[in-house]
Image 1 (cartoon, rainbow, N blue to C red):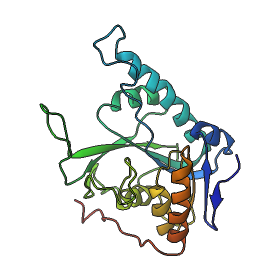
Image 2: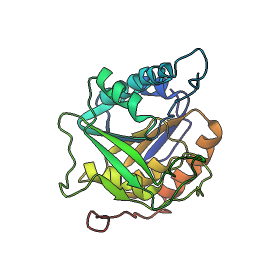
Image 3: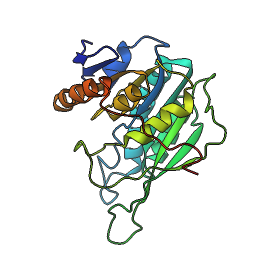
Length: 241
């Protein structure tokens, strides 16, 4: 796949994530931090002829495909972080089983903010991030807990609806790396916050997105981050305990 834009330490592609991953060589990357589409409740709502369980099975099949490919492109010490919520946890678990790559840990991201919810249930104040590790991968600070606070709100700085805070993404990368100049990838990069986080920590970045408009914006943001426009900012284990 031909790069859409690049800098000295980053390259982005405009296209289908599965096509891009298929073009990446084995054992190429060190860390993948991504927020894939959740693909839940796209075919039925449980009130019609279709059982909504089919939605979960279809989503799990798609998750399995890209999770297997990410594992292939990660080096033996590599790690995958994937954002999800309680609705998508079931297909993610099935995908992990089908890919024969079990989830190692589940991070609970405390957003320190109560988001919008339905008219009857509890309002959400957290999201989840699943962690997979290759055979030699590990979380280097054994004092890190699986609940971490990163304040967030409904106002997204870039305007992307699925944007995640850079400090959260930095925390993920830092938890499984002890040096710099590693290759961080994101096959569903959106507004390239993973890339901004990676560059701010001294790593390289490669990402892909289907939306050309976001690729165009991301190219500008990554160029700015490479030039030093984004400073490293994250909670330490002690500060977030």
